[in-house]
Image (cartoon, rainbow, N blue to C red; front, side, top):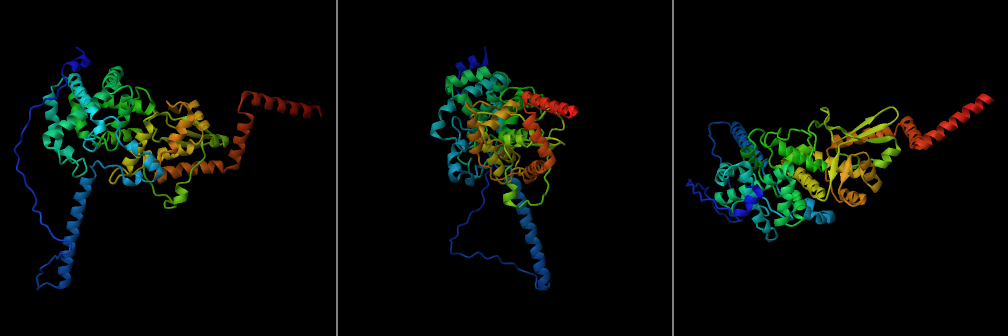
Amino acid sequence: MTPFQASKSSHAFDIKTKIYQKDNFKPVETEMSESEDVRIEMHSNQSEPADNVNHGYAREWEFCIQQYETVQISERKRKMEKVPPLLLKGEKGARNRQCYEPAVISLGPYHHKRDDLVAAEKYKLITLEEYCLICKNTMDSLYNKVFEVVQDARKCYVDGSTDEYNDEQFTGMMLRDGCFVLFFIYCIATEPNTMLMLNIEYLGTSGFLHIVGDILLLENQIPFIVLQVLLDMQFPEDRGERILNEFFNYLNYGKITTKKKKVLEMKQPLHLLELYRSHFISLGVHQKNTSGIWNYVKRNQSFPSVNELKAKGIFLKRTNVDDESYNEDINFHSYCCYGELEVVQRAVYENSKAIYLNMIAYESCPYNPNDLRVSTYIRLMKSLVVHHDDVKELRDNNILHHSFRRDEEVVKMYDEIDVPLVNVHVFNQLRRGIENHCNNKYKTWAAELITIYFSTPWKTVSLGVAILGLILTVIKM
């Protein structure tokens, strides 16, 4: 019996209620009116000098504040923040609002009770049973494993967002949502036809494309600690490394590839979006302070588009991601007669805009990685792609692949993405390298010579004939 056939037989999610008696300790709460004053009295030893007493109290308060800040920051670092409100303001923010909200399925508590997403809840029960079959474990065993980490999972969400769910309800949510995500990833990596068939039957033909985007929304994440315990039960050898790698390659290149890359090198990702972001970017760049870091106009100044660079003798080249020295999304090299812009290969499709916006939103949240690598990459692409001819040039060089009907739609997609901040070091380093190359008169002259006279075989032949004729004329004289 195949997993798909087995799902037909039982669609019920019936787990025995587990009751755990625990001591409940609640802090004492006091109420005070807005007009009341708060007074803190410090009783000092009158025998000690006043200065020493004040100094001692100051040190004590400083220590308390430092301890409080340390605890607060360590707790905040692991929160699944919602989309920063500033990203939703303005014309583009309002237009892009739907890119931050799930279209088909909710994952986690933030959008759990939306009426327009309730149809997918039945689909989660199907994928839960399917995941039990492929990992050869009972539903009770999966439930128990998730229950072991349910308190840590609660702490990952914004305070108050999980209060309405008791431990059993919250564990059930994490189990259904986590198994759905992993079953989807598993099918993409190994059995895409099975996933497509299930989507068509339960969610319609458009379900597949929407689910890819929904899984990577900032507000639609499952704590990775939940995904990891479920992965460990199915893939004890590599902890799911292979299927995660193939799924991320599918997102990056638009197809399943065998490019091997460690995706679980980071200590403990907060969620799948954070893990994919670490796979999307290169991690070998070190932050540096540069002059002009606070010059807003200079640091946000664009550089030429693809075809403008080509006219200056800067040609495109696809980055070899298999090279161990590869550590950048975009590199620039200036040679004696020409320049070379290396760009990593990517695929863009209908969901790419939403995925990019949510990774930018993740980088904009407090206490998250502040290297702004995705934001910088998108800002660079916005500079490179301003006309459909730029997209064509990227396609011809096997750098950018897309599923849109026209190249103009790719230009529109990048134009509609707002990038509030960039990695100043990476962005300025690339921009200055290109500016220095373009300002070199010798290199510009050589580029124009190549572009004008050697751009096609016929022009090369014509130039050769003209030079030969000139030589013969001088000899005859």
